Length: 116
Image: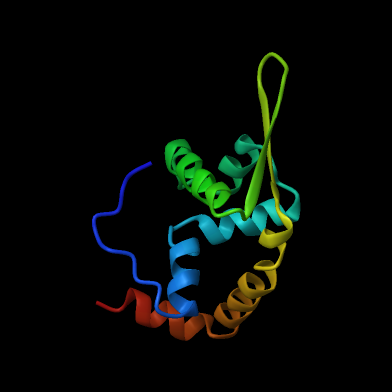
């Protein structure tokens, strides 16, 4: 895992949420794991723009933040599955609300994001 160079600021709840969810694919990973896509290959297919390495790093961070748990099955070839922890399940309503907000404001968001 790469070390952050800047000092972590945890002055309010938004800082805490940002620290846990910062990462391009983390919210999607949590959402897809909640939908039942638990194997790394399934998650890779759901997020084809992300490299395996980045997905692995972000899954590891989610695991360190106790939002997901990783199960390694002792077989050949090794089988790995991720699932949400009880703590991780509590963030799904927030992620869903953000998604609904973005869907509601789709046109404006696309316009301002792509504006140059």
